Length: 198
Image (tube, rainbow, N blue to C red; front, side, top):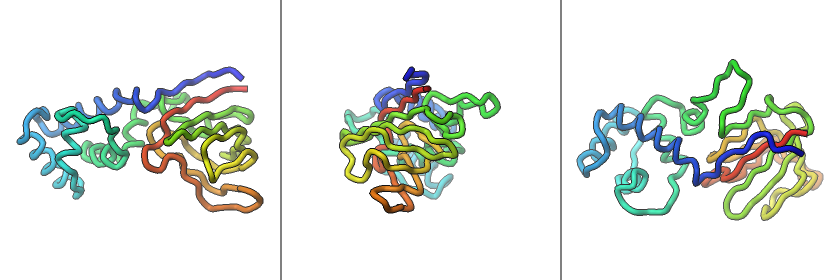
């Protein structure tokens, strides 16, 4: 197998977050540097989206207070909606050219894969899975570590993989039974994503 696309870990996802914050500050018309700036943002977000955010969450996100916690997908989605996107996934897909048939740096769409291609992903805490594409959005689990609900040989349908977002699968066949849904990385999303071509 030859790796043809490698996707950044969540720790390298700062570029997207910085771009989101740049757009947030542009829309707000002020930088986020003082307590009154954060108050203004919270009010603007509430007026625009109808959603509330914690001032401490915003301060951590922009580095106003020192904190090593990664922002949640929910927080990033609220800010993405504030600047006009559906959610965080919609925001990180913004750079993809839908007419080129190519993948963005952090998105894998099943209809861009060929049977035999493999998708490798990781999520917290210490979960790993390698899937082989069978065609028609169907995948087989080839290798798995740390997961209690996935086993080698399982099959499932996945439309899209996005770094930093949960992987949502349907029609999960596991030990002779079919479950309607399977979600990997529910809280923090996928932290590693790579594809390999046969």
